[in-house]
Length: 59
Image (spheres, rainbow, N blue to C red):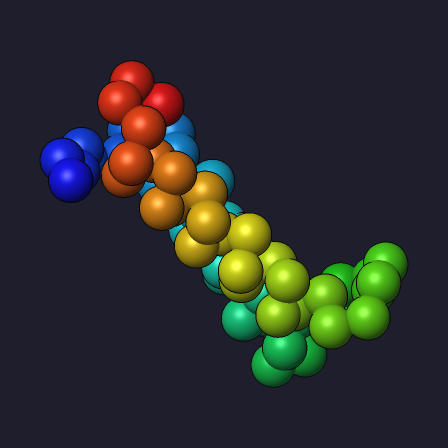
């Protein structure tokens, strides 16, 4: 399996999503909850975006 480094754009999207998950879990900023376990799913989506950035070339 050949892995590629993610672009800066993909890395920043992943960082923002996981950072928002941490902030909402700790309660530092009032983030409106749209669905149950929102902080968990934001973190999962952030890591999936980062994984796709590593697996797909040119993403």
